[in-house]
Amino acid sequence: MEMETKSKVLIIGGTGHLGKRLVKASLEQGHETYVLQRPDIGVNIAKVQMLLSFKKQGAHLVTGSFHDHQSLVDAVKQVDVVICAMSGDFHISNHPLLLQLKLVAAIKEAGNVKRFLPSEFGTDPSRMAHAIEPGRVTFDDKMVVRKAIEDARIPFTYVSANCFAGIFVGGLCQFGTILPSRDSVVLHGDGNQKSIFVDEDDVAAYIIKTIDDPRTLNKTLYIRPPANILSQRQVVEIWEKLLGKVLQKSSLSEKQFLDSLKGKDYFEQAVMSHFYHFFYEGCLANFEIGDDAEEACRLYPDIKYTKVEDYLKQYL
Image (cartoon, rainbow, N blue to C red; front, side, top):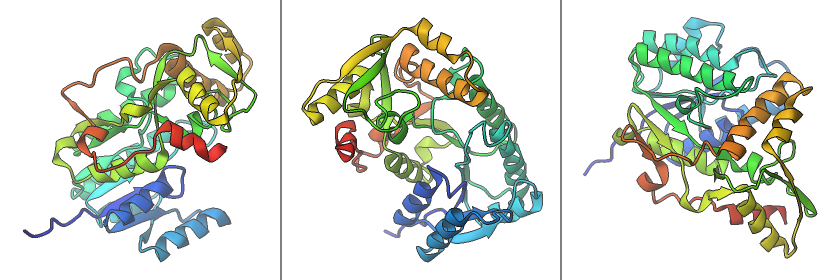
């Protein structure tokens, strides 16, 4: 039986937090891998050296910019699958995710792309129509991009990877910290709302695994590792067990948390409003996956995901 040829992949945002992991996973899983290199990279030595290291590992660097339509068309023409891992951070620019509309236009014109994965990788934005300001901008912009993709009839997969472990497990689900305290922790309310935590390396492995899978074409893929569907309190208890000591706990009521948003800058408010939905509302784990979606751990049992307990061990 002949081996099916693996798709060629273009990764946009390849030097970012998730992007660099996607490049690594794509190469590891045997895909010919292309990484977009911006012409205006300037003197960002860390990014330049990372791009050069990708090249050393066998990736191709392709020069292209969101401000040069033809460069994007030329870039996507070289591949079968396009993954955009650009950041949605507000403090980088205003509505950064809407830049992807330029990418949609390029993919539509090129006409050869078999699948596009836009920058999502968090909460499913189609379930966040009720989200509070200002964080809802992220979800609204993602939905604008989705509509453009579907209007252009571009084949897609949307990936909902829930909470990145590096950000949420490391900080015991607290805003403004990514290292776990050995002394005390502030719980969101009673700390019992369930969330879902995924190691970023695993997120990347699942994403690359799905790009040639017909089962996820034009669907949403949720990443829900069964052992990592946990409440903040459970994450804290796992850490306490590893530490061999009990942390001092205080609690922030829903009202106190929402009041604390006032007076913060726009970016902090946006991020905190996401924390509100995850940890007071429990928006990530409070629904069943519908027929128009798939679940990654069920589809790809060969990927041995990192459990929260093992993730926390690195901080000891």
